[in-house]
Image (cartoon, rainbow over all chains, first blue to last red):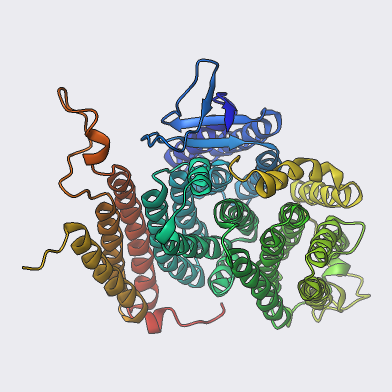
Length: 506
Length: 124
């Protein structure tokens, strides 16, 4: 493996700008105008960096052995204590981090408009959540992966507890207790991989496994795989952790859930790719991942169907569609991985549309219960249009983006002679439509009790201009990716090819 | 006399701490006791990681002036374990602080430290 020593300038910026912003807004605490300017400027800056950054590596600590021609070469026969705490920024990282940066901007602007005092620490947590997801996606070493996942889980608790309700505090406590268990497991996994291979760098560890016979140490490798899978399950909210994660999604402010579900999807993708690269060749590894994914899809969508609150429905659909992302990855084929990655991008976009619509329902003061709502379409036709189109995208209806990625995943499952998996994906798609439109009919389309259809004096609900623009932008992305999927697929194919054919290259 | 290596003893002690910690977190009803159980679990993981780097008759992994370079790779204790432990201690403290803050907030709201009472599901 030869890689150019680039020490890319943009990677430290993507990490340090949000961290410094978090420190500053935390110190500013109650200076509303300064927090607004600083946080919005920082969100715009990371979006710009993510978009214009070239591709390459950055080493935060320790450097690999460098040859005179500026490349480093891995030599499996020589054991050296090189740390190689390495970050990589490639096309996959670019598209996912750019989308997350856009959503960070939206979340920051909405938070700035929603709160007017003492919200510096809240904005700080928002930025740090962004950092944790970006770091997990970019890192190519187990050490940074572990730290970013641990940091991310604590920030999830912080973001959820910030909503201030008793239910949110309970959800945060339960999630943190489980994160303590899973985080310890991840630390043990890291220790075992270090013990077997001697390397913290994922590329080096994979090279070691490919060039050395582990003999009786395969059992230890399986234990490391089990603990890393546990971290994957808990970071992404897969089964059996789905009740905790759905509690988290439901309890946070909907705009915060936009960032939380994005963080979850990025962690699912990042850890899933590491699992495939490192353990994909182990017997039963992909089967275990696929089983977890299929069960998550089924349980998530069944739970979504029986909810009586729009927020709960969305929370369980997010969980179910996390399974959709990981099904694609777990298939382990080029087509499957492309489908899984594309589904992650699409899922982030259309779920954000639905969550922002949910935020608007709360903003109107109408609540999100299916039982007591109705008539919102009459009072806010634009919001009804956005939520219906968002539901089309989430249900995989063309010409929106969800259709393209689900089609690729179904084709990948059929190509692997797994028609039952393809059938489950179809079932999830149809059930998503039913679950969403059951809620949408009750809240938006059904005549309201307090403002019946046709009542002239019925008061209109106006969507704030900024949120209207955000919803329009997200819907445009959803439509464009649905019509021209190559725009996103161009960023995803390289990573999928590497995972399948050259897994030691990040 | 039966000889047991220090590394094995370390792993046994770590396993006991981890099992006691997990059992405490799962089965104890008092939230503060759950928190203490978490610290036991964290200590067990730290001990396991330190034990991983143990080398029989080993030396501290610092290359002193005049030391034999050829012997160093074979005798030096694995440095990654203690390195991870340092980070894990920081993460453990952060997690403990957040858990403690949430427990205090819930105690103020519900007036109890019983998980069965405080964490019972209701939809607000």
